Amino acid sequence: MLKKQFHSGLKAGTSIAIGYFPVALTFGLLAKTTGLSLMEATAMSLFVYAGAAQYISLSMIKFGVDPVLIVMNTFIVNIRHFLMTASLNEKMHRAPKWVKAVYSFGITDESFSVIATQKEEKVSTAFAFGVSIIAYGSWVIFTAVGHVIGANLPAFLQAAMSIALYAMFVGLLVPSMKGNRKVVMLAGIAAAIHCFFYFTGLLSTGWAILVSTLASAVLVEMFYARRGQAVAGMYPEKGDE
Amino acid sequence: MGSWYWWMLLGMALVTYIPRMVPLTFLDGKKLPPIVSGVLSNIPYAVLGALIFPAILFVQEGNILFGVIGAATAFLIAILGGGVMPVVLGTIGVLAIYSLFL
Image (cartoon, rainbow over all chains, first blue to last red; front, side, top):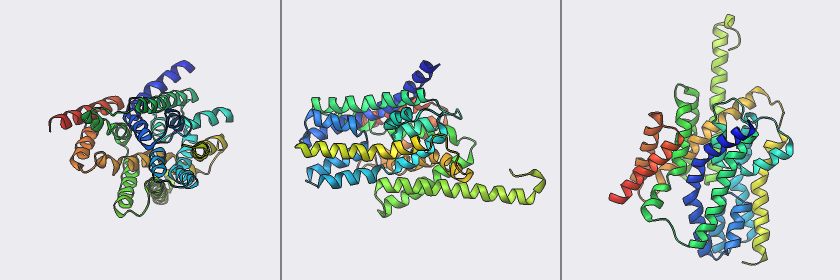
């Protein structure tokens, strides 16, 4: 049972591993051109494991920015994970604190999306480990590979594969949207708010994702709560639906 | 890089790990008010909306058509009932052909 859950986690995480492949490869290559050794570059993917923050840190290192500022920026970029893991907690089976402390290391935007959109009401720890390990493995290994070979994929493939993670998000979202207006509203409103922040340049990406996600989740919840009350008010005999 | 690099890495690792670990570990088994848990259960779908748009349109700098074709392909395969893997591979395939020949 445990093994089966772990295997289906590995399987569900494969699309993340494919999506990380070109991103990690490019990171390894950029790290090399920034002057990081193979060990330094791989260690960052191994210990930090945060795509966007790692990319930003490279350009900050290149411009000689104070390392303290690089750490602070990393925190700001990753603050959104507070929201995701708080949400994920509702979805996960209970487990000893240390076990959750271990697999929480593997929670990224991508693994969160895969785990949190599973159809089952609760997800097992073994499944979360499966998803996380294959994604993490891909990220670390292809960082090293990118540094060693010091070259990118053929241009046409690099370009095409840059869509992989977004295609995965679409593949996760659409089945849940079918016949579920709440999901359509949640995704649509968050997308609209994020577009607003993007085009006005009001917030940096990490904050923009955090704010648009939270705003959409709260607005839609309020909308449904009010509608529930209105319905209950009109048809008191129907109870508190 | 000097030893500062490794200190920076330690700092980056900690500030990345804390937002991942704290909620999952310390909220375990806690019963949250219904409105809070309602909002939290909405997060995955809202996050997906925010992660997809507008970024999917700008995967290739200066060529929005590339992103539009990718997005349209992904949504089409997904709506037709393809699973996650067919959506990913199908979209990569269509864009590979597009960038090879056009």
